[in-house]
Image 1 (cartoon, rainbow, N blue to C red):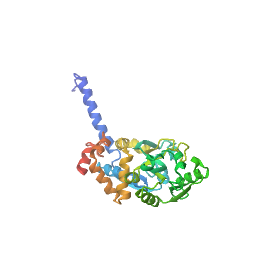
Image 2: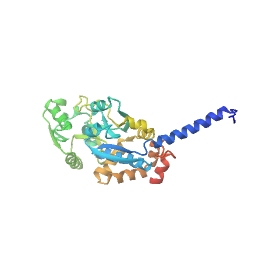
Image 3: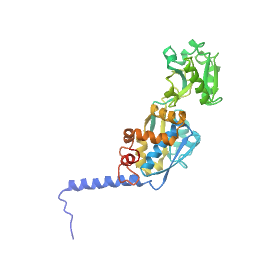
Image 4: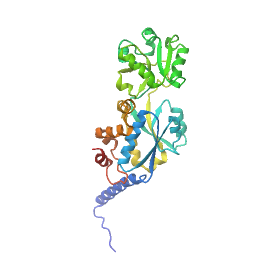
Length: 319
């Protein structure tokens, strides 16, 4: 019988650990490689392109993906049974719903994927801000310059109600003001015309959005909380099926690493929602032009078969 001579235990341990790491990397890559990863997203420009960026990268790594779009509440509520991953869960505005879907542990908050976001609030051009309008408390002092009008979106919707209720309750001494609701596109067309003439205008804005690329804007302080959650930091989070994350730690690592700035997502929205380019084309062009950022996201991530670092596959596809 041949006996293993244990003359160099440290070398044996080191070899065993190396084999373990390589094996685990392969297991992480293949755990979900034979299944399609189902992404859900609201029908908004920013998350549409964001999801396309993620699915293009995953497909280049050897995974199959599918996508479903719809209303945000419906999409989030479809976790975990019908959808594996959602990239656009806004806090604090969706805190109550997120608490409900996470209650039984079947849905996990993976990470905050968007920084520097701002929920809907009253917004002015920079030249108005520089003239002294820094807070909603400053509006009434310049009532005549604004023609006592606030331009808002979606008549009867939550944003419009926040403004109309504030006027009804004389918040910030706005009792004599009027709100003028319209669709987002109509409101921004009005804003564009007024800014072109350097007129004073106050309207409901947010970021990320193409408005932040086209216009130089400032968001007003809201010390009395005209808009719910305005005193809380805004964050956009990735939510996922908990079992999916356990079965595929390789994709889970990628999702944890995936973080973009509001400026980047505003550019995506500009290319897709403002210029009218195809979302998939916008995503692929951005990946090709930003491989250094992509490399940060793919640190420690492997291809679906577990055979090589994911970045190698991305460079072949987009380099």
